[in-house]
Image (tube, rainbow, N blue to C red; front, side, top):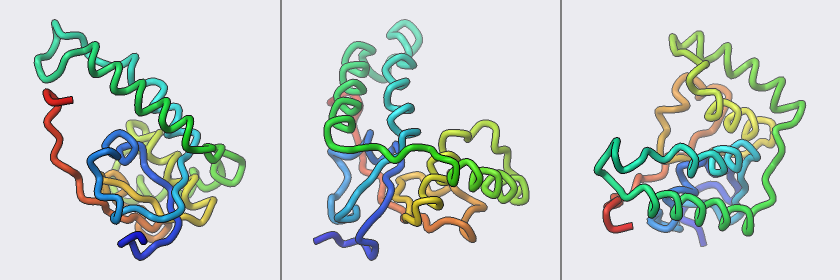
Length: 154
């Protein structure tokens, strides 16, 4: 049984990336993902910084880990498409973000995921609740504690 007050929910991309370390009782029993999350996971391995630009992780291991997360998500979930209702909702979300004094342009994927959650009447589970600041009147955001992860141990 989930420790969450919500039985169903949409998982933000960060939940899938960190899922093996996230306490499963923090997640809903019935989980879904957006096609936008699948797009972010598909792009992730191509955006890994090379070893010559950073020393936080091995680029090859990080790409392999990203591909593993993507493959597991593809196997486990049938993503919810970003449809016409989510597209209409995205306009309201953009207005709320601008009204809160934030810039929507740099947060397009997050806001599309939020629009999908609203269109599907699902709460959004995330380890980054601040990414959805200004949307509290439109969206139920369920904060999930961010697990401590040692990237070198991946």
